Image 1 (cartoon, one colour):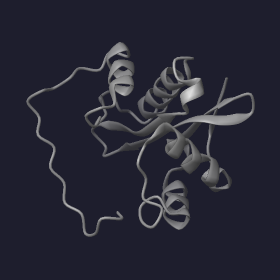
Image 2: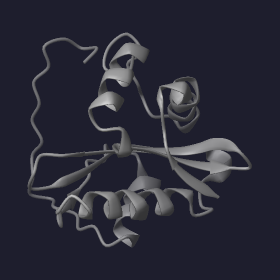
Image 3: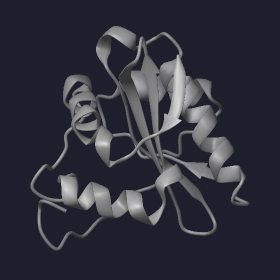
Image 4: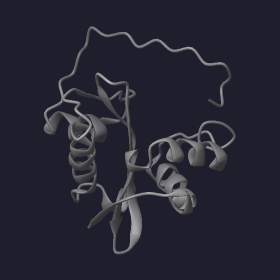
Length: 142
């Protein structure tokens, strides 16, 4: 297993992982090649990949808003789930966020993603049942 920062050259492999892992993505909007390249240019170290046998097997995107670090878009291809790739991605992204002075980490998990829920609980994340998530989009592709 190898962890490394991803680049725009990894775009096809990134969306391939999301697709194979069943993570929805918006190729005409926020997940288009130009948009991913824009996001990577802002903060390249926040795009992290897990490689198994030289192939991208898992991805996580880190973001922060100066108070709290967020782990987003975590996905591992089915044949490598349960082999430590997801846990390694979480640990390394937390390390990268800590290096920026952050000590609170958060993640949003949609219903039905039991494997993600189990991984984050095992990593020490607490479930907050009393939080309602609201969002507003300028369009559905964002």
